Image (cartoon, chains in turn brown, yellow):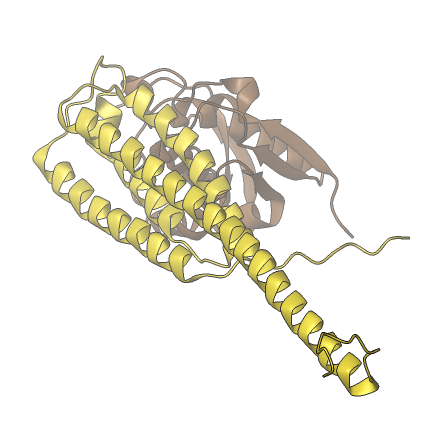
Length: 144
Length: 174
């Protein structure tokens, strides 16, 4: 049976998304992940629903914004859990959806397994991560 | 002495067959001439339209790269330009595939260029700057991608000229 969905539009966050990191500019991928995506994904998981993220109707993206935002999701929740519980809508630029599923998710899963360091460039509130089979909230990495 | 003149006599059956044959042959010839020429004219004008559109896209890319190499564009402007061009090329290719059965590859190259440039550290570090100063390393990669892009556009023009227009099936009336 198809899961119910929770929709999240990046347009509601900003029409003008930014670069990868907070120190590089406003509305970054890092900021989007920590202020919106991490918590929204966790809420959908808890509710047994699928999170559908809509990329359309913004003024465009840097691939690094999407890489940082969606990559961190895999790093914190694992590839297996993310692909079962997320979908991405990108009718205006379908290549972004393909990039996220075929490149970003697998790349960050490798980084997660190898325990590669993730860069944080600002102070963030606690965020959710799967640790020892449980979802826990903490400030997992300090700002560099 | 008999005056000879044209005496009209009613055509025989074989005469009718010959007359009909002449009329039908002439009619078919005229129909072919008009219809085929008309279809050719329509087909040629459709092809010319797509060729013009591909030249327009090439020109927009030329201007974009010029501005990029002369440090006239900001990262923000570049990002927005990429989105606009993605939409434009996508619509162009959809119609091309539908009307002329051509399989273009311009969008694939365009998307690769977009993803490559906007992923670079330099591009992200300079996101807030008034203009993006492209480095030599990136420039070389951009030139290589642009070469592929020009090949894809040239292939489109060749394929358009070789193609035949798709026949549209008439929808059945209920």
